[in-house]
Amino acid sequence: MDQETREQHARTPGRTGKRAPYANGAKKRAELVEAAFQVFAEKGYLGLSIRQIAEAVGTSHTALLHHFGSKEALLEAVLVLREEREGPWRKELISEKGLLETVPAVMRHNAGIRGVIHLDATLRAEAISPDHPAHDFLLRRNKDFVDSVHSELERELAAGRLREGFAPLVLARQITALVDGIQLAWLYDESVDMAEHLQAYMDLVKKN
Image (tube, rainbow, N blue to C red; front, side, top):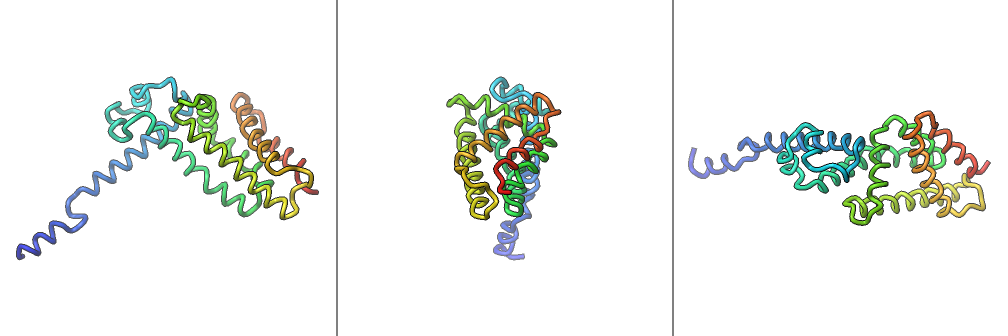
C-alpha cells in the first residue's frame, strides 16, 4: 500500500471509531431530556437548581452541564421535545376531520398524558414573569395556538360547518382559553371529562 493509499484509507469515514461515542452521546442526551421532562412536569422549573435536576434524573450536575450547557438550555430541549411529540398527529387529525371534530379528540388524548399537561400548566404559571427563560417561547406558542385555531375556524366557516354570527378570532380565543382552563380543572379533579366539555362547546358553534 503506497503512501497516498494509506492517507486515503486513514481519512475514510467510519474508520476512526468516533461515530459510536457520538451516537452514545446523542442517546444519553435524549434520555436526559426525557427524564428532565418528567421532573419539570412534577416539580416545576423555577424552584430547582441544576444539581437538584441532575439528582432527580440520576446523573451528575457536571454531566448535565456537559450535554446542555445550562439549566435554560435543558428547559428549551424539554419544550422542543413536547412540541415534537404532540404536534404532528394533531395537525394530521385537523387536516382529515377539521377543527370542530378534532378538539374533543385532542382532549380525549390529553387525558392519557397527564405528565405533559402538568408540565404545560406549571410552565404557563411560572413563565408569566418576563424574566422566566420560557416566557418568550410560551408567548410565541400561545400566539401560534390562537393563530392556528383562527385559521382553522376560517376554513370551517368557508366549508359551511361553522354557525354564522361568530367572529372567528373571538371564537379562537374562547376555544384556546377553554382548552387551558378545562385542563387545569382536570389536573385538580380527574373526574372532569375534558372531551365532553369541549364537545358541548363545539356543538354550540357548529352549523346544524
